[in-house]
Image (cartoon, rainbow over all chains, first blue to last red):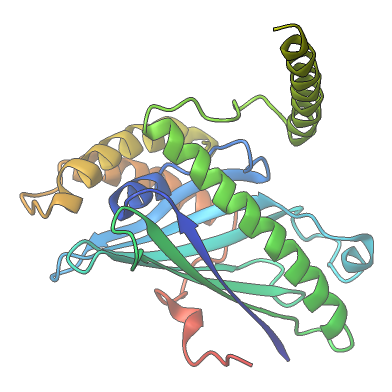
Length: 210
Length: 74
């Protein structure tokens, strides 16, 4: 049994910039779980497309009930492969990402297509599909639910990471530095809201005296 | 970003720098004048492939874009 998921994303940057950012995604404030990144294969095809294979090591974060099914010797980090084809003629990029460790327990495959947005030529749309499954009898529902929930969180981080890298590339001050954490950000947002409310209140008061 | 082979991180960074420049300035602009990064790539690969073997990372025999053949959309 395979759980299928599909969504679309939009990045307000050109396809070229998104492809450039794709190779510079790591590290970013949302990728603390990514430990290593390596290109382990790359070639330009006769039709001038770029094929690449990237190997990633990520921290393996699973709930305790899942860890019972992991052999004791299994690495605490997970290995993921990401294959990609960039076609500069058609202005498309296709990626396929899947885990090569822990795959019996849970297999997550993600396929993405990056294209120029149909409505706005300066934007990039991302079609994302995922297939989540397990080979361990009796765990299907639990693994798929867990896998899907984590995948959705992952997608949010991916998009935020992209936006961060893209805004840095475009010379804007990104909304986070590498040392900030999610908690700090939440705290900052709450504080900013309080300050803004205070500000608005004091502005309202001032108007009374004008 | 670190390489999976601790000794390869510097080689990786050198290669990444070269690649990123070539990718943005030449490849995406349709310039097929050749890849200036072949030498740095070769050195980096020599190091990282060795690290992959030593760590027993199961990358062999995995077909390019392999797993996505005949996927159901249920």
